[in-house]
Structures are given as C-alpha cells and as structure tokens.
Image (cartoon, rainbow, N blue to C red):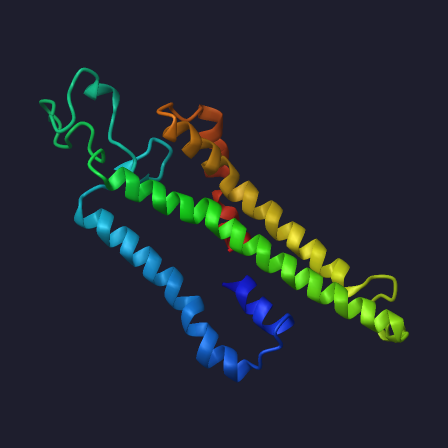
Length: 197
C-alpha cells in the first residue's frame, strides 16, 4: 500500500485530496478484505493447524501420531482428524501463500522501479538546467540515489522476512518437511514485517 501511495504521489503527482478520496479506500480495503476472506474461510472450514514452526495457518495436519492412519481418521486420545486440510483448504492455502509471497514482491518491485525511473528522469532534467546545485541536503547525492537505497533497504528487509517462508513453503509443496534451520530463521526474521510492511 505504501508503495502504491508513493507511486501516486511521485510518478502521477496526485494531490492529497485525490489520494484520500479515490486511492486510499483501495489501499486499505484490498488488504483488509483479503485477510478477512482468507481467514474467515479457513476458520469456517476449521482448517487452522499448527505448522510446527510456531505459526498457525492451513497446512495439512500430519503429526507423527497419524502415521498409518488415513485422512479423516481420528486416533484414540486425539480430537483432530489426521490429514485435516487435504480437502481443498490446501489449495486455498497455497493460493494465499502465492499471493503473499510472490504477487506482493512483484507489485512492490514494479512500483519501486517506476518510482526510481521517475525520480531519475527528474534528476536528469534538473541536471540539464543546473538545478542540482540547489540541492541543500547533499549536492553530491541525487534524489534517485536516495530512492534506490530506500528501495534496496525495503527489498532486503522483505526478503529477509519472507524468503525463509518461501523456502519452507517450497519444501511443503514438494511434500517435504521444513528444515529445522529454515523454521528458526523464518521465525527469527518474522518481526521484520514492521520494516517491510
């Protein structure tokens, strides 16, 4: 949302009144609607399971006590059916993971690239007219360089936050267990969401 807001301000030069009335409802509404739809659906289908890494979402419920049991069977002394999540919730889970981990970086990368090109074009225009000498902050640093550094910092924090989840989810899609190191790294860097979000 912040990248799309910056894109509207920097590239398209939209005033605050336009952003507040036309853009901001979508910047808030789409993430809220996505989170509500995803989680209400999973909650209604009773598909929240512990993934073994300290996070509850919708992985298939296959703990060690389910070895030798078919999907839907409940072992004595337990109340969650083995294989819980195999009935379509997994496809929904993978769709939401795909959206979060692959579609978002594509949108963010594209918007940051467009912002960078726009600021670089402004810097080049200003340099042709000698206006870069008016930069009071640091005459040897261009605005495009500042934008590039911020984009790199954002990208690095995003991939530190979500890169290990992408790796773990890739293992999960291949029906393999997350490596222990990947679980620890994913949960260690997860608080960076505040930096990249």
